[in-house]
Length: 132
Image 1 (cartoon, rainbow, N blue to C red):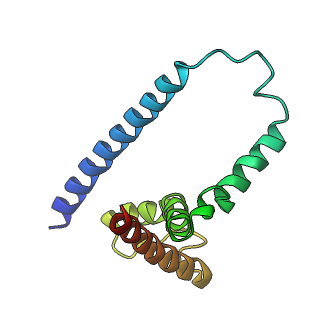
Image 2 (image 1 turned 180 degrees about the vertical axis):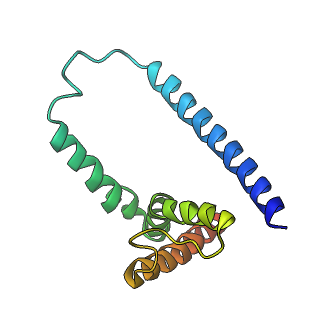
């Protein structure tokens, strides 16, 4: 039974990775349709630009104007990024049932965070489905 779980999971991981790469290529090709930007105008001040992206993403400043939708979207967005390590943990557990992430795998604050964000991500998705 474990061999079947490993095979199915690895196939799904490969399919998911291929779909992810395909989506990235579609986004890249779409962005290439735009007008050329003069050299240096979008690459200046990398620290400030990185800080702005982090502030916009973590603060969800534009989406939070939409009330419940903004809050639900924030949890979904943060969940997709922050729960990546749960996928790594799950892959490890396919091969060794008691495997945990090194260093943080048995750290209580991390586990509480994962449970909270996981729950709120699912609730956020359900809220967005109902609203949509």
